[in-house]
Image (tube, rainbow, N blue to C red):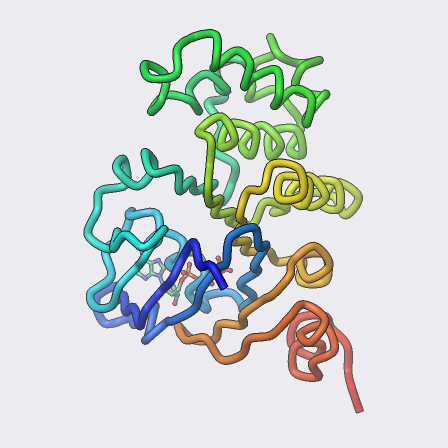
Length: 244
Ligand code: ATP
């Protein structure tokens, strides 16, 4: 086992609301791990604590064996832990290409223009539609294309670990499958480790190796994707299947 990310008993409160209670789990190098849970279970808060946007009140977050719990987000990004938040958040008044350049912001000086341009070409191979639309303003792309741009921009940061918060939110079912297949490609072809939150539980368990289930701020279940897909509670709670 070679954990890239190890979460050790973290807590987070919004005033009186306990959003994370003694959460512990890990993600191994090269894995896709999905975090399942009903609305309000604490999934988004969990990703925000990992990327440094929120500080846990207790517990430790280890990324490649460094305790990053108290680090500012910009230092965490420099270590190549990259968070793609909900609702895409591309820079809508900038072109596709400029959005990609901004993704490389933290290593732009170190890498130099040639390496950045090579990286853009690699990203265009993965997402040909973005190459076709490279001069288009990001705000005028379709929802699915904007999601691809959000993931592509994260790739420009050369991630070691990618945190994806609901990449399929608001997308049509066919596009959801396409976006999740891209996520699988990132792991298969680029070796990027992924922690994925996804409302589409069936589709996310199909691409993930393992998963955890959160409820009311705690992890209540874990297993391989196959185990979770066959789990009666998971099927009833998330897949809309009644199991007798
Ligand atoms: P969803 O799937 O609906 O996005 P989630 O599992 O991502 O839900 P969180 O958004 O992490 O859940 O919310 C966890 C809990 O913390 C919820 O009870 C939510 O109401 C509460 N919460 C989240 N953000 C805040 C905030 N800024 N202030 C107060 N409470 C908050």
